[in-house]
Length: 496
Ligand code: HEC
Image (cartoon, rainbow, N blue to C red):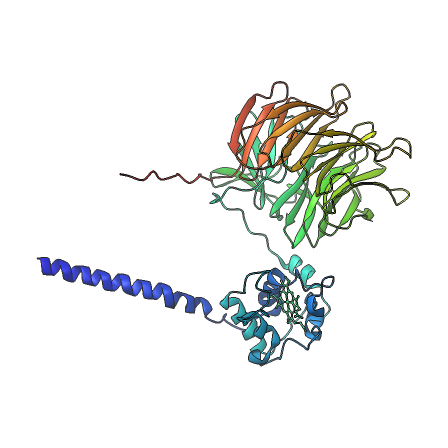
């Protein structure tokens, strides 16, 4: 009996051992197996280069004098020679450098992770097959643009495994629901009960800014970080919902009744978006440092303003629609005169990243929120002498202020802000006075919105937590995690 049991264990051991050997050795080598059929440059190789190399080897940075963002430039090589020797992967500089165990490895060891063996194998196989460019792609084709056009968006997860960071949110025009950006979708929640009402699939991976138009359609500035940015208009009530993960969902990628207009597509993240007070124009800006002003009816880009030295993070129109107020990673906020195409003022006081901007409804004051934890009020349109003069600092947030929402009520203007200090705060923006602090978040609060009726304020955090408060007394109306199907991991209590 005992012997039997032992031999039993031995078989078990052997099986377990074999499984381990299989896991350790067989799995990686099958993963290393060469891709079936010929390797495609544009579909297989270029995405690896884009993800791991373009940050330093694009037309602007050209580290080692090498630009890889067109096939032609890649083959021209950098300060050395053509990094690709067709048919001979072992003699190709690119393979030598990505597989190097020394300091010369690409990406440089202190600045990026090594390519995975299977990624190196794809590049090597493509070179051994002759390093051909796909039919239909020109040697001069901008690879970033080509990859963006070829990109096919994936569906969101039916039930998320991880909480989704919130970058943007907006109340519906009736103040009853909150729209929140998820991963490849917008989600619509009841602001009183916190129940998920609808999921709207989007091509964009992230929603970075959103605002409703006077006609009730929703403008969303989106991103697939480092690869594409967009501005699209949605009718969030249209479409025939189908069940997705237990919730009604509509297709904002292909259903043209839901996705009503595509206004802009660029090659990098769009961070900030604003609608002019007359509801006719949209301004949007992001990593390419250009703020584009688009006429909604015609879809024409009327202005392309390049006025900052780094990413645009926040955009607002002046109340008369004639000027733009912008926030940038270049540590300044600026005001731009659209008609005369000139910079009216630069506000440098944050001395750190400026995340967002707003103006009072009379346009007299501008506000900027920064990494320095301050919301600064400054004169925007007064006499030339005083222009840009800091008038007040709205202090209180202990850490970076990411977003400000401005509620242009002529009687009681209201501003709300959110911060890395895990609070939402409200302000009387004109007096520059702090009103209420809304706590209870357990992560940095990235997004904030005020309901059109002025009664509610909502904040959305990096861990997906959403809290809706009453503006009047800062009491909590509802809190929920805006991640469909996500169940927070239970902390195991060790048994003794
Ligand atoms: C963080 C920046 C960075 C990243 C990311 C990076 N490189 Fe480089 N690369 C450099 C720098 C800097 C040099 C110049 C090194 C020198 O001259 O000593 C260089 C040089 C090169 C060269 C030699 C060019 C020449 O002719 O002198 C090749 C080839 C190269 N990189 C390939 C790659 C590939 C392939 C990737 C992605 C897998 C990559 N690099 C990612 C910074 C980077």
